[in-house]
Amino acid sequence: MVQIKPKHNPPTRHPARVLLILKHKKACIIPTCALLLFLYLQFSINYIKEEQGVKIYDVSHLPQQCQEVATKFHKCQQNSPPLVLACHRKWCSTFGHCDPCAGIGDRTQRMLQFAAMAVDKCVRMEFDYVPLGLNVVSDAVYRDPLGYAGEVLHKRSYDVSARNALDTDKLGKERLYSHFFGSTVSSLKQTYDPCLFHTILQPNVNLQREIDTTLSNLGGVEEKKIGIHFRTGDSIAFGMDFTKDKRVSDLKGSLDKMLKCAQNLSEKLYHTTEVTYYLATDNSQVKDLLPKMDNTTVHTLPIRPSSYLKSEGEKDAWLELYLLSQMDGLVMNPVSSNYEGTAFRVSTFAMLVKNIGFFEEDQVMECAFG
Image: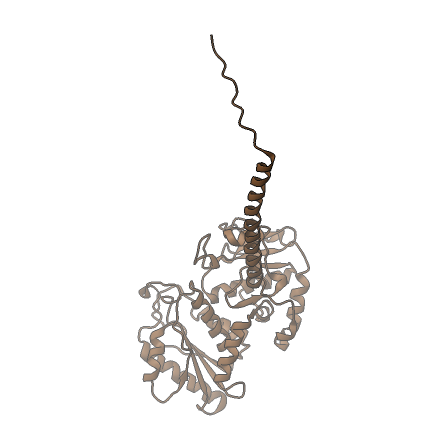
């Protein structure tokens, strides 16, 4: 015979005790929910400040010659669906998909080439990329459906690692995604209107304050200024082996040549060498050599060039870009004749300075080292 054990009936709790337990649990849940809500709102505010610390469209900051281009760009921004241009370098210092998207010169050139194509086809453009220290105009900021959760988890609703070819026939017909350097796009022009840079990007409050302070220390708008951009290679900017991108062999001799070129440009423009000289370089050793140079006082920022993958290196590079663009003349160095690397003859960073500063050809001098 199989005996069936009677079911165990748990003791019945007194109603007053049940109410006490529920009240205790509720007392624990409410502070926890309040804390989570506070953290969520705090992150949301910070997210808005970071990702949408962007200017509502305002033409007052634009150079006069850029009004027409800006008006056309923002008119096309009313169209949809958009082309989303993506770069996730801001995740490189923590976790998630990391892609440095090349240096500032190459990256910004590509960004402006895409923007030029979008304006030509009058397609809405959004950027899933906010340069450190800059604002992207609000109607061109990409906002992912994952919202704040996507920022916390470093995720996107689309495949951030995809490098698919961009089907330009679908532009303006469906939402498209493209990485900065995902694929060759035949519709991209090699040139772009520099007004697009000023239309889309603008220094944030902190960076603008640094720009204004430095320019004031250099004599303000009244003082004639010659900018010198001395690029020695990618060893600092990207942490590369110096021997793999060696553009300058004799630093002191090359620096001396750059300073002489700056004096020559000043003499050509103003019939005097008594002007303010400002040097920007990617090499700390060049800055260390400045006190040893004779006859020329050269100003430079007290910053040590560092990798663009680091936040300070990125911000400092943007600062120097804007400062150089505000000079009255510009000296840059092309690669030497015996250079064996893959870089352009003149760095895209220097060419970006020339373009956004609206320099005329007679205001620019290439200083070759042989």
